[in-house]
Amino acid sequence: MGVSVEAKTEIVRIDINDETLIEAAKILGTKSAAETVLAALREVVDMQRRVEAFDNLAKMAAEGDFDVLLDKRNYRP
Image 1 (cartoon, rainbow, N blue to C red):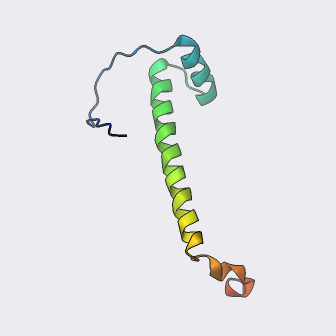
Image 2: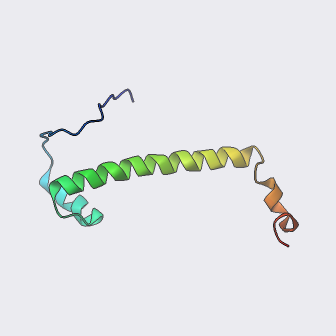
Image 3: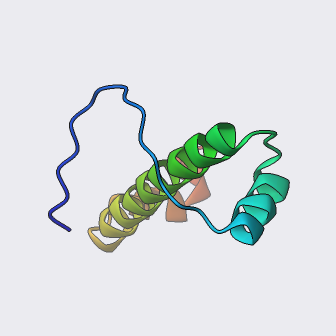
């Protein structure tokens, strides 16, 4: 994506559609605009991490890393 963001706290003024902000706040259970934006950003980061973890599991499965689990004798006493 090529986006570079410096990791520091700063005040940023942005225009946000009121209806979208209200809808997002309802979904996220947040009470302020700042809380809603931060929660939405966290959700995006968490979603990307979940996608990457799923892709990693799919790769491991394709490589046969879990084949030992196909036979229950391998993991049950």
